[in-house]
Amino acid sequence: MTRHTTPLAATALALAVAATGCSTASGSADDISELTLRVGDQLAGAEPLLEAAGELEGTPYEIEWSTFTSGPPLLEAMHADAVDIGQVGNTPPVFAAAADSSVRIVSAFDTTPDGTSVVVPADSGIEEAADLEGASVAVARGSSAHGLLLGILDAEGLDFDDLDVNYVQPADALASFSEGEVDAWATWDPYVSQAEDQAGAEILVNAEGHTNTFNFQVASEDALDDPVREAAVEDYVERIHRAVEWSRENPEEYAQVWAEHSGLPAEVTALAAERREPSPRQVDAALIEDQQVLADNFAEAGEIPDAPDMAEFVDDRFDHLVPSS
Image (tube, rainbow, N blue to C red; front, side):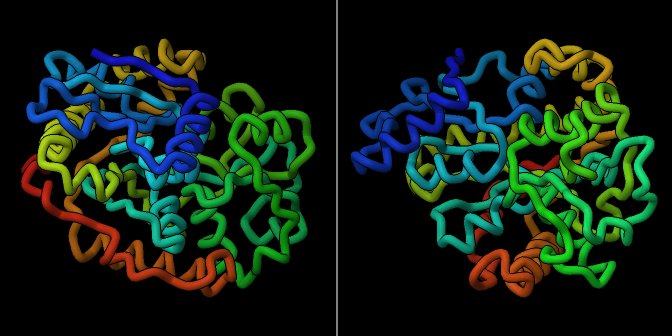
């Protein structure tokens, strides 16, 4: 059983919870069947994935879905105790950790590099990454695309000050890109695919060699500390792992449900689903090391005050759920 809140409602919910200091959770529940698990989602999120894979059937708890424009506002809502668990890319947990937010990475899967890319118009004079110097680039601050842009600049010996960076959310970025108001757009799927399909964009450079391509399930400390809510999180994470593996083998079926949920054309979700090739992985030392490099680089670039110790913001208690394949 599920219910939904809109992005605006999700933001209002987070602010209300933060203002009152109260949780919307049913703290008195002594059985998982009485629980409502509050899940934060995005356009490239978990609900269509789980539905397509049949993993929303028979959940022993209710799910309340809240949809956000990107990872950072999702994790802000989690810190405000409005969300228990949610899916984000590699960079939002770094910014949340830098703010000493009470969130923990609890599961992960990897995807192919094209899913996080910088796109440019097909007739652009920008032909290689070095040509971004002096260009106007749209990107969502604190998103995985922000991490990609940082990696590209490091590789080219450039700084953020060498670009005209427009920090905007994906919907506004798509409009700016389509209308020629920015020279390039750093983003993630399905927006990469949407730009290719609807705005004639081409991928200038993808994530390969520039940043990791992890996707995470991130949970609040409060959810993990409550035995009943933790049990629901564990069940949810196991369903995510199964759904991720299913989607790799069934991209067409996944794309159809994704299109129905998102309102995106089937051509867009089909391209994004086909090249995604997700693979569940453990929350291990190698993952922590990659995330630490990202945090250190953001701190060095002055995008966050100090680099957090990312080992303090992961929790591997659900690693036994990662499929052996």
